[in-house]
Length: 418
Ligand code: UD1
View 1 (cartoon, helix red, strand yellow):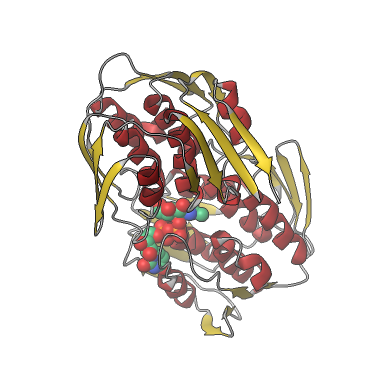
View 2: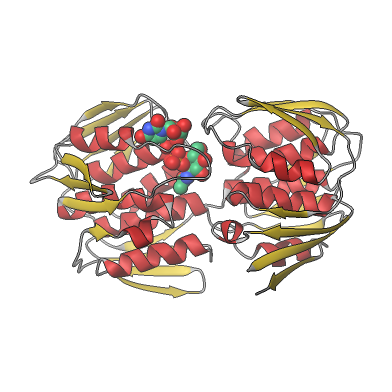
């Protein structure tokens, strides 16, 4: 079993470089299947989710090579259009292979990933889009079967704002005949990044980042190079960690515009935030005050920053609250924080945090990827030794997290025990 041992407390100081965006890369790599050529993807983070997607691409016949942070995918020869359960169960983003294989081969058989730590994750909006594009879709034997002799344009109004369904619709539509219009789409930075990647390969997509995306189908996508944007959530995690430890950290390689929802909340709490062209300094030079947060689709406050923010709130005198409006089971980590001394009450969609209690190190577990990051921040704040189990969740999405925190003065060890 692998664990992180965090020795606290620590005041983080120094500079940290942010990696490429996980949520962009887990969509861009499946999207390379639409390319009839070779794609060079730069700024790819070395995380386990990427390794799983590489295995899936190889199982479909693509040739994949990874050198430094550049991943090269040669998808000229595709030999299968089926993603097996052994891969799909490890990665929710395997659903992007539905859109990309349908667009590439006119057929996709992708195993459903099953249950998830964040709650139910329906895919009805993805299926609605594939049907709109003219595909026949059925769910049998634990897999989604999509088939279509030829994909045609469609006009979709999404019932919920969904990152995954928006991206899958772009993947399915970019080679469909005619003009597809998608309304009530998600606007996250990685939606724009996937559209930019597809356009760089020859697609014709406009409006990504607004409420309406228009896709004019093209016959072919050729190869090329593309650099993935910096990870908004990794950057936000280090910003929260700097504030929670009352540190002073320059977070480098970020797009400050993408961070505004997080920077704004930190400023409201009296945290110092200074923006530069591609970096943000976070520091604390006066008493902080607690706040209220409601998670929303972008440009609202990201649900993926919710657990890290709860740790900061637990360190601040006064009462703070978080309303979770995206995922039904995202507060499980609060039980772990309570074991470290935090005073948190969860009622329905809202967590109320009575901040200011002294946290003490304890054995805890990472309930999911972002909850795991929150446990590290709590360990940095707490007095004594925090042992974090189930760190595989954390390593799915954070490149070199131990090295990056330790370079800021943290004392974290990664240990393997029988
Ligand atoms: C993506 C992110 C995840 C983040 C989430 C919300 C990736 C790989 N993952 O997940 O980290 O927490 O966005 O920002 O990018 N829904 C439906 N029907 C559907 C699809 C979604 O009802 O067909 C609902 C979901 O239950 C949820 C909400 O829509 O309540 C948002 O989900 P969605 O944006 O699709 O999340 P993911 O793309 O799975």
